[in-house]
Length: 331
Image (cartoon, rainbow, N blue to C red; front, side, top):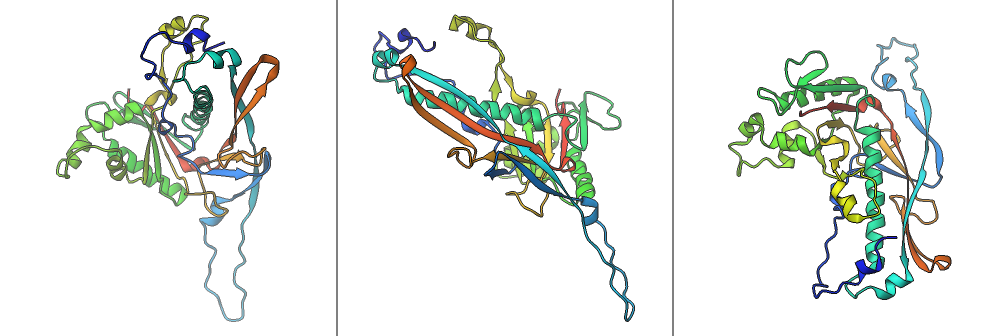
């Protein structure tokens, strides 16, 4: 069981200092891209409208004493199922009794459990949305001589990221009648864009000439630019923590080299499309709007207090034509 008693009782005077590698909540994006839909039931149906029927007109010139053309639309249904995800950390009575005053075991366990949940949710978000084969349109970056659905990667000389994105926005408008309003990029993509000659040339006469995320969003014509900074490791846990750390390798979720253009309304609506929704079961035993709840209860059989976190969600691609995935935007 970790931490051990020796981890919590330190025999040095620097008890006012501790170091933790808990990622900031700002690094996670799963709840920032698509609307969250709180639901009372774990599973249910939702309506989907036929796009073509809303993009066609049957209006005709009306002759005297004749009826106007009759019109209408069809709806279909899709379903969600909000699975429950859980993890816990036990605080042993012996550890608590021996811990020095600088350790707040309940707080630290709550933070650790919460971080586990948020990381799991962002991993699932990337596996659901941030890859090829999900959206109606996929484009792939290549190092040279792009053809067909390819484009020149944005860290290559002569590449044109602004034109690439804005041309996709025009195609998006033609397909859907909407403009994508959110763009998600990996950390390496942001690095390439901040140093790209085309972008630097566009902003050289601005007040400070600094390439900010808001400035990139403005150049691309989207309302919101989100950078996926969260990292994770798949290194298995060893008995010796030093061995685990020595063998650990870390990666950005989604690889850090791709981008997603999508339309996301401010909130779920009956009459407005969305690329995706996250259904959260807030009717589950007092969960909050995000479908999260943290419990603290006694495990007398193991002489410990348990901090348990639960999260419920189902991430759904609602409208595949409301997203464009740009794979390998940088090499």
